[in-house]
Length: 354
Image 1: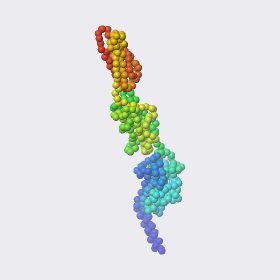
Image 2: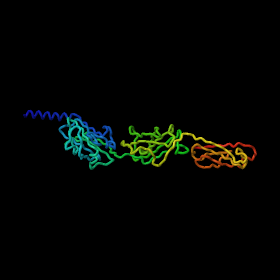
Image 3: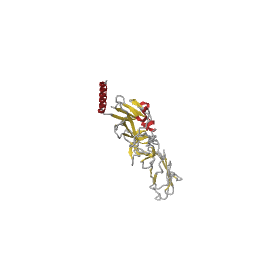
């Protein structure tokens, strides 16, 4: 009997020695992600976790000592370590007191333990929507910590970004509210927090159904999106752009309108004009003598951008009616132009913009 006890002791000591020779591995995984996903954000806090949980983290460990107990520890300030979780789920291994106090054991050296977002958020020191969390495993009654004594840190960001200001404009030299072929349309934004533009978390979407070029501003809250007019639809420019903050949170909503009400209309078609000229001569409207009035009438097939520049008989300042966006113009008095009593043609020049 004594020999059997000695043999059991030797086997037990040998098993303990063997476990110390095997390197223990501990990995933490945010819900719905991989071990390389170093953010705890809106997505991970609501994703499906192991054991039927929602949000939180899963710890997977190997080469544990089945004869010992382990404790999940977490810190929100990097200094004070807490074990005050009310419950966990063990997919591999076992829980001590239902996981209360973060306690668990391994099976055949393996353990997979999950804790939900709801349980973590119920801890009295939970920082709220913004902060950080460190996780580590402590081997009970020892100073052994896995994967390190410092633990692994994730920023906590449960606030989606939004757009504070946005405006759209074109570089059209006549009217920045319009754009024609080769003009550049630029949508500029300022966000509520820093945004990122690194794959796969990049600005994506379209301006009038076409790609755009993203340009960074003075800081990571300021961005602009440029699109050169090519085959854009001739209409008010539409856009739909998704964006992410630095912790991979998708924006509250896509950018589909401006905060200041600005718009740009694409018009790639050159307007056409119907032009007629006549005088008020009593005998013939195609002739004019000194003192007669010559009227040039213009009809455009669309609204022009203000009155055109008109020259009649080299006089640069005829009276234009109406003076703003026009369908027709008139009148000019040429008193004194025909004092040589010769017949003259009345040349004119029209310079206009849409």
